[in-house]
Length: 111
Length: 116
Image (tube, each protein chain N blue to C red):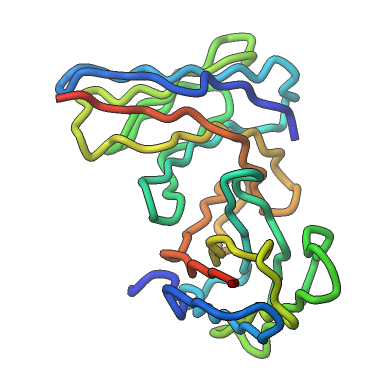
């Protein structure tokens, strides 16, 4: 699986959009980009995933650049409950289902 | 569905004691994963099962650790003998067969182990 790089921490004002970047410059054509988050003391939670098209669900939007070397997770209206560590993971289709977590981005939503 | 259920939520034990952590995956899921999380090493995959069969245990730290999945609804992670460096939060996760690329893992709330 391709290595991903994320900033260690970010702040965001409550009610504003939180844009979390992820670099995956060595991603291969069959690797999906997954985003999980971990709220303090809880298990990681799936947010969204995508291959090359932008994706949106009830939690967030995922924007993947055309060359697929980077992506951005967007929380459109961040709340205090969105404070968490956000993990960006690249995983190949057809591979085993395990996910390798990096160190992620600690997002702090400020009141 | 109740989600992935882990027990105990907290365990405090003394060095040398046996520790058994338990996991009930989501019904119908055929993949089960054990992860360990520490401040120093983050989230590490220890072992995972597919259809109750261990597929990859390369992340298991040493022989003191063992995991079993006797049936589709139950798995255990055992540490014997336990050591202080085993102190961590242990997460169990499960995943269903939902086609290529879905890969969504559902995690339990974790078992926090403290070895004195």
